[in-house]
Image (cartoon, rainbow, N blue to C red; front, side, top):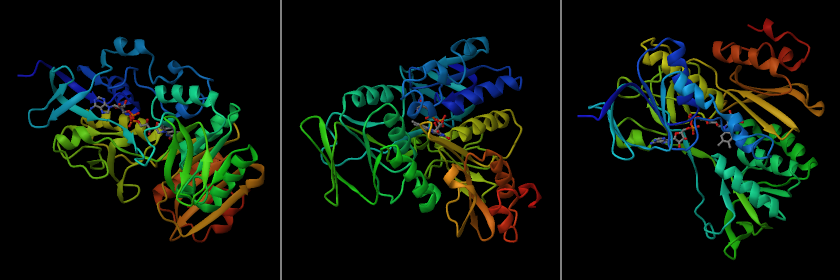
Length: 410
Ligand SMILES: Cc1cc2nc3c(=O)[nH]c(=O)nc-3n(C[C@H](O)[C@H](O)[C@H](O)COP(=O)(O)OP(=O)(O)OC[C@H]3O[C@@H](n4cnc5c(N)ncnc54)[C@H](O)[C@@H]3O)c2cc1C
């Protein structure tokens, strides 16, 4: 016998769960809602952690998805600082840290992602940081303030954003990346060169095509050493080596798991009545015609909302084109729809020198993704073309002409 019963159980105290809770209430669901999260904070948005919050320009509370009072006002029981230890899909119960067993009607698993830890020689030195939560940002900021130089290991958005944020605070930064150009894994080498110029003109050193060998230190990190022999002296390191889905609870419960928790196009897992959303969710994308898992703020929110609708029996397919944004301090803001895993053509539109362009990624004559810097208006059209599978092979000139009407491409 379970200790108690709830109608809706939401495991994971992040974006996806918070939006799921809000949507349940918006839709008039009257049943009991329990939201269980491991972190001490109420659900919050992570993007500021590498941006405004890291730069000391914003308070933690500004990132909260809902004000703390919202939960009580909306009868959503918030169990922060508590782990869901195990889930029994047959008995439909979850065991919480401390031993309490809760039976549920419907459940959402939104356990997010975990950072990849680099296990190389010297990894135990002080001053080597990863970034996922507020506390990590506090520790980075404190170390960076004392540092002669900070090295960012990684060439993706976390390393790039942190390099920009710390440089904006007057900290000397160098990046060591396997990619030849920053952000090139997602956006390609040409866009990567554009971002590299933005970083270098502000003083960030970029060392691409380098693989980490080890960290040197005397208890505290003193240098990052690459396999090529390149040695970057430093007093602090921030590693941005990607994340992987936190699917541990689901896996132990026997739910189907691949690179994330496997869901159908309605975000339902292999067990009826148990849904997944956000960074941990690997779903059948009706837009892309393949299974997809992305780690985007907007996707966690939209999937939380869609999961709520489906917990209430709507049976809605998740058909939103994934959207991502990132800022390099106040030097450049990028937005992206996609993701284009592969493409065979790139078309530039607008003026990269003026910092206002969109870059279109085509595959077999169709839009696979679109990056915008200062041309947000292009993204709505890119999203439409991507979702509808519009054949743009006869519209290359219009795509490249910043004055042409994209709405006419159908
Ligand atoms: C520093 C940083 C900057 C980012 N910037 C951007 C950006 O600019 N643009 C963008 O689109 N995306 C960005 N992202 C990604 C975005 O924040 C994530 O995609 C989003 O937070 C995912 O939300 P989620 O609810 O799936 O997971 P999370 O926000 O990770 O929440 C999951 C929560 O569940 C908890 N949990 C896990 N297991 C259990 C358990 N068994 N019991 C209880 N609780 C558990 C975790 O501790 C965590 O608190 C950024 C991420 C980081 C880390």
